[in-house]
Amino acid sequence: MDEFLTAVALVISLNAVICLYRAAVGPTTQDRLLGVNIVGTKTLVVVILVTFILAENYFLDVAIVYALLLFVVTVAVSRYLEAEGWKEAES
Amino acid sequence: MNWLSAVLGERILGTAKAFRRRGLLFVIMILFWIILTASLALHEMLLGAICSAAVAALTVSLLGRALDPHITPAVLLRLPLFMLRLIWEIVKANLDVARIILNPGLPIDPRIVEYRTYLPGDLPRTVFSDSITLTPGTVTVELRGDLLNVHCLCPYHEEGLAGLERLVAWLFGVRRDGEVRKGG
Amino acid sequence: MTAKEIVAGIFCCIGTFFFILGTTGLLRMPDIFSRLHPSTKCDTLGACSVIVGMAVYSGWSWDLLKLIFIACFLLLSSATCGHAIGRSALRRDIPYWRRQDEGAKSGDGA
Image (cartoon, rainbow over all chains, first blue to last red; front, side, top):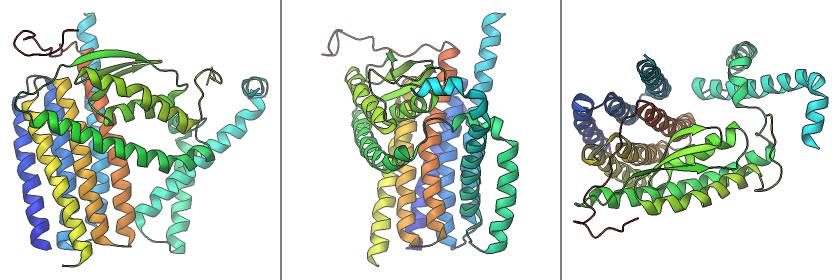
């Protein structure tokens, strides 16, 4: 079962690397943010898988904090971009 | 009527409402504490209760707005059924999006439509827009007052919105004509 | 191989499939609003089904509670993240992609 979970984690990590393409060349800043968000979701799942591969319970706390942090980062950065846009539109 | 008593006894009920908000916030905080510590030992629970009470007392003005008027026991009772139905809708949505993505021709015709909802209050509208985002081919991109801007992937996706709105209205016990509580 | 492991493996395979689908959609879609669709839907379902598989695998323990919490939070947060990104794109007046070739395809008019 451990080998299977490792294979799943590897495939998901490969997906995350491919998603970095969108974060690197995305035409708009929002595309980059979306790419980063998706990479974060995939990393979260890999952390959960690593919890059960290594049989270490405390990684789940890392996963919880990672999920909370990912949400806060995405919302804060998108609010920031929005505010910047308003400033540009007014001036 | 509900709103009349709310208007008349606002100052008397104000403290009770704030107390209820603090209690609700305290319950949520301590549930989160139990999930994080993963134990039910006495000293852990005592420390958690102290911390939760302090956090709930300090942040009630920050977080309390999101909680208050629409969370009732009936709604909490209907929530699991709603979640089951929503998960079924999400699975259908994913199969639909999968069919679109894997099609070599990419048969999409996106457009942004405006949708005016009759749901009152912040919480039902938030639940409605989140449900829209998770169900077939539609993403809420703006929510201002009772007007939603919804980005639809294909024109036929727009038809699913009314049924979803009925589902959320059923969850919160809102009828289409009456009982639109203003000033909440 | 117990039955528990087989069920967990099936859920993990479903989740991986949806993750690959989300990546494909992210690369193929023409504009930011369309890219929100695969990212919010396929990624959420992929993550949730892997988490459900791991919950089945872990059995009755405190890990189960934490996994359920993460799944519920992901359902809420990814929809909200998609909405926030979409709103910031809308307010920056990023134009959204419309299908131009009405004559080439046999699509409906209006």
